[in-house]
Image (cartoon, rainbow, N blue to C red; front, side, top):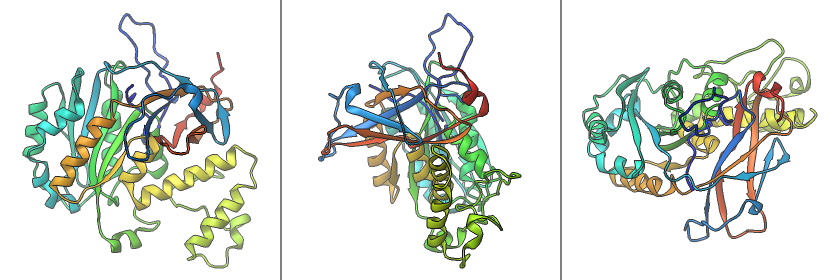
Length: 377
């Protein structure tokens, strides 16, 4: 088994790319033009040990609450890997640079023994490519060793979108993954929230993230104002966590500062819509809210990766070694949505009659209008 690179998010989203015939082998590439959704899944028992013996009938997946027919791919452990190491060099990340100086061996463990390409991206108020994709892990390690402190920015979403765009240009036979090291709160990204959500979840990129605290005060004051808000006429803007139009269902909110009440009311309003639209929009609201509160944790959940707290150099290495064990040891499940629609989709993967086991998988993906309109085969 093995992690198929992609939704960002991410989506980072999660469908097979429609590509012209080619003599080269084509691995699944999650694209919004496709109607195939990839759901890599990690299964562990109560002791945290990986479980490898499950069959496709042991899994149940829903797309916006509608159960789907699953396919379990065969072992893909020999697939090559394209990996972007995206590191925050500015803001609260500047004091962490010493922790990245001797990671060559650990990055090699994450990549494993498959053909690979690794790139290094650093970001502060803007992302920049420090090392283009290379099979030379020592070169990637040297780039991390020589990182310089950046400015006061922490444009995490810009860095992720930049990294996803780099991965899209890699050969389709490569799995795609991002290793993100950043603080929890974005500062200064120019990417609109809706565009960020689309970028994170519209490819088959899995994001593994290590986050360090950026301060309770920052999180408390972040609210609705740090990230750009994308507003559409009569549409669904994802800039704020909870929609609050001046009229209609949300217009009766007596306390505009009561965030929890607004969350409940937003859910009540949305559930008045006909499913699956209500579930899809509520999932998008939760995802946007999560990106405002903790970017690295949210993108890991969206894309089926994993999130770890980064406290010091020792915890960083320990977490990376855990990732190196988990990344290639995933069930690769897929399905064709029964009722595709443009926008964000909520995905939930569960195990049937396996209460002692825990599954980790992506929680959503993004589909554009061309994917939703594509006919089923």
